[in-house]
Amino acid sequence: MGSGLVAVTGGSGFCGGVVARAAAVAGATVVCLGRRPGPVGEHRYWDAARTTPDLAGADVVLHLAAAVGDPPPGRASEAAFRAVNVDGTARLLEAAGDRPVVWVSSASVYAPAGPEPISEDHPLGGMTAYGRTKAAGERLALDAGAVVLRPRAVYGAGDPHLLPRLRRVVRGGRAWLPGPDVALSLTAVENLADACLAATGWPAGVYNIADAVAYQRDAVVGAVCGVPVAHLPISLVRAAAAVITRTARITRRPPLLSRYAVEQLTSPVTLDIGRARAQGWTPRRSFADFVETLPAIR
Image 1 (cartoon, one colour):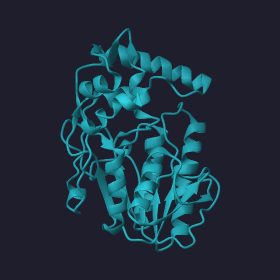
Image 2 (cartoon, one colour; image 1 turned 30 degrees about the horizontal axis):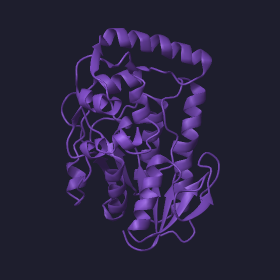
Image 3 (tube, rainbow, N blue to C red; image 1 turned 60 degrees about the vertical axis):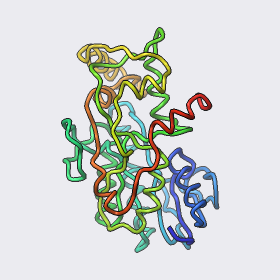
């Protein structure tokens, strides 16, 4: 990463904010594009669902703006996510022209896999509006010659999604999880930020981004929640998720427990990060580093 002007979309979000700060520390002049200002640099308003971003003067574009989450099923959710993750991507790529673009995707685009590490060539098959629209946005980015990064379950201080969701499983002094323990890849937000800055010089294509090793689910949840882990039958949890999802279709509110969430907790999902390592990127942070900060951020 040089000292030029770096445009970071979604700079007011969790990942985008960390990336924007990292770019500034690396010596770049930062412009944050989004509906709200980022933590550093100039703010240029951009509604990814409706308008074209102002990239004037930018040398590099790091695209982290996205519609995220596990929304209620239905056409309305699909359309809302598509407006940002697909249509917004198209507008961004048109504005970027021949500038280098790093497009941050997600491992949620992958179809279900077995216990073997998932390579970038694994079939796609997102289970949610988020996964499907990120996959569609990816295709546009790749066609335009961008670098696409696929992190999984990004965590860190200030995370508004993964860690709060994990803490909801605590009842009666136990963290209740479905089925037996499984191995999972996670991505420290600092590792993602390092990859975003480094990837501006990588060949176009797709790269998995995760911590150096996979973790055992029960150990992660126990550390985050600060309580012992207990197990529930997978069949029982899946049945509950089906009922809750049907209710969400009626209420049009995000389900507290979805089929996707159950699969994320019960299927071993580990990423092969060899392709990114071959470019010289090395994940420097681990979940153990994050656990050391937990007493201060709980």
